[in-house]
Each structure stands twice: as structure tokens, then as C-alpha cells.
Length: 118
Length: 196
Length: 139
Picture (tube, rainbow over the protein chains, first blue to last red):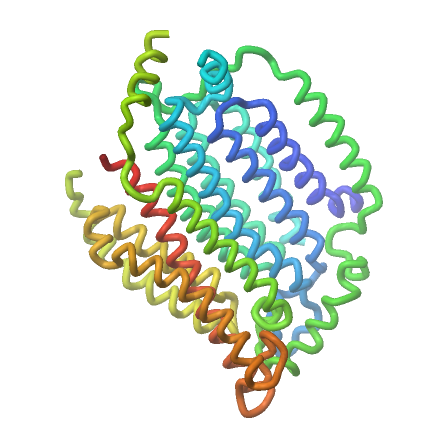
């Protein structure tokens, strides 16, 4: 039971990671691929924050009478990664919009057919 | 104990939501579920003692990125019903499934050696983390260690991150800023495709 | 779009509060959770809410596009400028110790300025992204 509680976080991280990976490599819709990438990204965030958590720790804001804090370094890395992540997601969505305007579709198979019929 | 229970329940919700996102075909529903997914993640970050990250995830994931995805859906929807459905799968994707299961099993096998969740003597807690927590108040006088590390100790890193955001904004402006062009070639292509 | 009375009243009530909260998160980030990244995103969320409820044209009147582009660059310039300023004052790049009379004061000023730069860039970059996507739908 202790082993289960101690590793449940990591197993869910792996499930999320694999769901994201599967969505990216098996679906043809470009918007859905981007959402799969986002799920993958969030799973990496969870991996980092789980590694930084300390049992019975408080948030890393120094205060009187608190002895144990969680690790601030993963928080810093992930905090910036989230905002950078939304900026890069927006860039990917912009590319999808341009693909739709040029090809008239966002399905990978149809784009492939259009490319070969020219 | 109570935070372990909340942690496990939220993680289970999260895994369920992600599988629902994978299985649903309607893109509109997927984007809404992704907003819920982000909100659940923000809750989990609070449980894992990371209020700064939770703050950001709640504002960015449940707010901005959902709005951006909805705006994209409005631009890429089909001409007629069903507007938001993705094309049906022509075949079952066995190869990706095998790849994912094999990779996932290898990763789960790897977790056997990870120190258990929250253990205070894990390698990640014993090096720089202790240094930051002990010295940040003396060095910078800022109680929030996350801010001290973000802006002072790792200031050069953050400068790079800000530049990345700036560059992404410039790139999006170059791609889809301004009005939509109406070339004749594009109109012809779409007609041909509708007939086919 | 047909105006919706409930949305208009609630939005008018809640937008100033969101902006105020963003400023609180920005300048209280040293002592509580918060900082430039969060504040920028919350600030832009308030303006995005405004443009969703009152229409894109009205939002563009509040913050014209060329301002947004200048502000997005200004944030990065503030950040890099603090680094160069500390070079001139005799420290390393982005070493805030020499900005104030003693180390603590210098670090405080440096962190405040740097977070301000981050906040300005993030807020205007998010608004640029939103306006680019929303403006694309118009013919």
C-alpha cells in the first residue's frame, strides 16, 4: 500500500504521457494532435512538481515557524514552461489556421491526397 | 493523510479526462474537456504545494489557451454540418497502440527505482534546493523563494523565456496577423475538393 | 452580436477587479504567490473578457495594435536593460547588488524591475496572440 501511494503520481504521469503520445501519433486531425501534445506537456509538468514535493512541506514562501518547504526549483522551471507552452501552442494553432486557408482541410490524410493530386 | 486522498482522487479524474479527450471525436467538446483538464491540474498543483504554478496553470490553461483554441476552431470549422467533428478513423491504429504500450511499460518499470512521492531524502531535495531555501532570504530579502530564484538566481534563464514568448508573438503576427487574403487559386481548390 | 444585459453588467463589475488583482499579483509577488508571468496573463485575461463581451472593435480602441507591439518589445528591453545597467554599475550581467545602496535594496529593486518587464511582455504578447486569432475571422 505504501508503495502504491508513493508511486501513484508517477504512474498517472506515465498514463497521461502515453495518452498524449497516442493522440499525437494515431489521430489525423491537426487540432487534436496539438491537444495531445498539450496533454504530454502537462504530464511533464506533473513529473517535475511531483519530484519537488516533500511530505508535510509547505509552499516555498519563507515564514516564521515553518521548517519544511517543498523544492522551489521545479516550480520556477514549470512556471515559465507553462507560459512558454501557451505561446508555442498559439504558434502551432496559427500554422493550423494557415494550413486550413491553403488546403481547405485540417485532416492529415486529405492534405496528403491534395499534395499528391497536384 | 487528507492531501494524499485528494491527490489520488484528482489524479484519477485527470487520467479519466485525458482518456475522454483521446476518445471523443467532436473538437468543440475536446476543447471544453481540455479546459477542465487544466483546472484539475491547477487544483493538483495546489495540493502538491506549488501555489505559483497553480496560479499560472489556472490563468493560462483554463483561460487563455481555451480561448485561443476556440478562436482557432471558429477559423478551421467545416463549411457544413458537422462543423467540429474530426474525420472518422479509417483503420484501427494498432502500431501506435503497441508503441505506446511498450514505451509505457518500460517507463513504469523505471519508476521502481524512483524514491517514493514526497520522500525528504530524495536526491532532488538534497542539493540546490536546500541552498536556495537557506540563502534566498539573506541574499535577496524576498520571502517567496520562487520569485527569488526566478528573477535573481536564474535571471538569465528567465530573460531567455521572455524572449521566447516575444518571438512566438512576433511569429504568430507574421503568420496570421492582418486580414485574410482571398486569392483566386484557393477558391478554385476548395470547389474542386467539395465536388470530390 | 446581440448585446446581453447580464453579461454586460457582470463584466463591467468584474473587469476592474481582475485588473486590480493582476496589479496586486504583480507587485506582491515578492511576498506571496505571484509574479510577472501570472500577473501578465491575468491582466490580458481581463482585456480578453472585455473584447468577448463588448466586441473586438471596442477592445482595439482601448489598446491599439501598434501600442501592443511597442509594449511587447518594451518588456524585453526593460529586462535586458536592467542587466546592462548592472554591468555599468560594476557588477555582472543581471547582478542586481549594485543597483541599490546595499545588497538587499539592490536585489529588491532589480527583482521589481525585472518582474515588471516580464509582466508587460507577457500581457501584451497574450493580447497580440488573441487579437491575431480573433481578427483573422473578419473578412
